[in-house]
Length: 239
Image 1 (cartoon, one colour):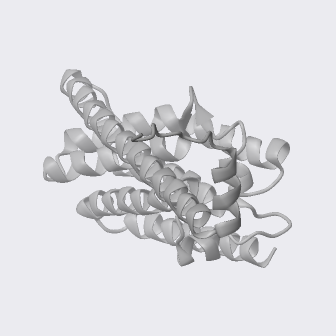
Image 2 (cartoon, rainbow, N blue to C red):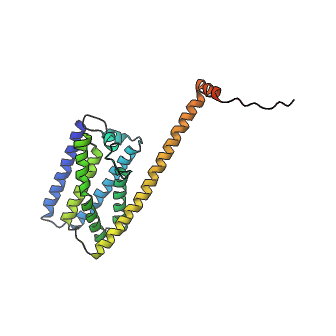
Image 3 (cartoon, rainbow, N blue to C red):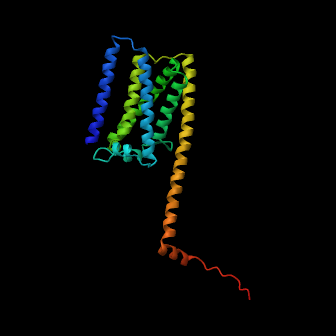
């Protein structure tokens, strides 16, 4: 309950800051500030999605454990392990990380090109229905909240708002071509992240079975029990 209140207070503070910024924008020209805010939000999205992937892979992180500490209304594990946490067998956390990493790479590689920022704004519009989907699933079906997931939802909405007020949402032939390139970056990021997650799972399983095997070998009772079950190997006599 307390953690959920903290998250909600943080979200309200962020929204208030954005509202203040928009109010100031009515009187001053902050053209480049929109670009930096957009990039900053994408970077924060990358960091939060890394935390979600860490939680999904069952890797220990004190920060993630503190944020996702279990309570009556907060339980990240329940959300991340629910049947709503995957899309065609792929974890939403991996998709989200690929999404933000691909966009961040596109922005930095293009040196904050306006066509790339506009392409990202158009792609964000397509993903907005996922915000409603995630919130509805957590509230009415899973009935617990994942703070990290909620932060991602807020980031998506904020990126859309900044894109709207920054004038990045427009369409022309050049933009459509750039959209394809940004999607290609997201796809490449997805392939790399997907393979990395599979490799991490493989390494984790190997260490687990290696550890279990060593325990069995070191336990004399277990070792002798298994040895007795084995067939006796008779060697021919030299006589």
